[in-house]
Length: 142
Image (cartoon, rainbow, N blue to C red):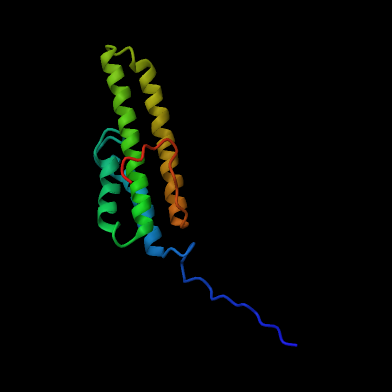
């Protein structure tokens, strides 16, 4: 008796979950561009740079790369959320004549550190071809 073997072709070189390497790299860049943009504009949370990078990548690649479209929107939404939270904490500090900064500054540092960790995790996951969802992100852009 002969046995038939169901042999499946190997995945394309560099493919993870069927997502091309170039698409995974652009998705990773969408997440990391928030850090780069924040550093270039000399302020991570309040600068326009933290969401300018993901915005540019999303606008460039949304029509041709579905995975990049999804991940760039996720990065953009998360960074807008973080910037809004930081702005609110900053305003609380000002409106309380500086007393609120005693609470706001440690919270801002903690949120900034958490955002850094989440962005690095998102970059790694997207480079592996896995869609990452940031916790606590308000999804303004769908």
